[in-house]
Length: 316
Image 1: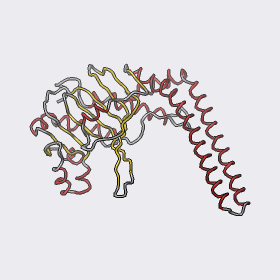
Image 2 (image 1 turned 45 degrees about the vertical axis):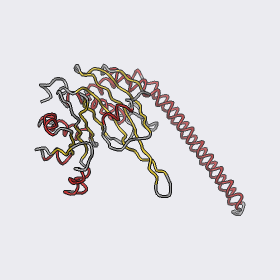
Image 3 (image 1 turned 90 degrees about the vertical axis):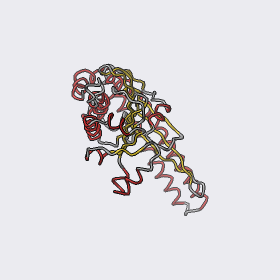
Image 4 (image 1 turned 180 degrees about the horizontal axis):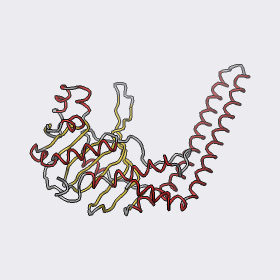
């Protein structure tokens, strides 16, 4: 599918959306002009400051002016980027998703209820958002995915708040072809890598369920498995499924969270950044730009085939 998306872009889409490149160049030129004007203004203010013999009241005025100018420059750049991003998603990402036979809502995202249902984390989040919602049928399987970002806040002993990212990346959901009744989680094996044998003890304290040990050394090194039912977990994680999840994780080149809950498989690809945001400085027709977005779409679209979700027989 990756090759097909590239062919579609270069044979059809590139010419049809050529106006976007003009929009990008105009927006980028305005951003650069804004930065130049701000730099010149900052330089003039500094010269004025130097000539006032470093008087305290002038120091405050200089600081205020530089702060105000910096904020204005950033807001202007953010506005230009947001405006271009809307056009980019509508005419480039939207058309690519349409080519795949799926629906696309640039400002939509999977609900916080779905993310909580997947239960990748024992900690809850206090802010949640996302974009780039994709839905549709792939080889008879109803799939949904979007970019999501969930964060939480902690306070230290002095009451200072710090915001942390719990998850940022693609969140994917599809029906799983094997019947099951209990919950099973397949998560990145961070504790084992860092703490060794002590990490196994720490993992055993997870309150989601019992730690499940499986007969696949490569899988065990990459993931840790918890389940409410050991037998059902081994039924779900057949040798074929373990190999497929491992291959998917290696192909995605990012930490992968998986859960089997309520007849569905949930996947969290933890990229740590937005997936379909354009860069004003990069030409739309550049291979690097097109490759990035085609790879992301092909990865998510290909998950159905990669995990053999089309039928119980194919699921192994």
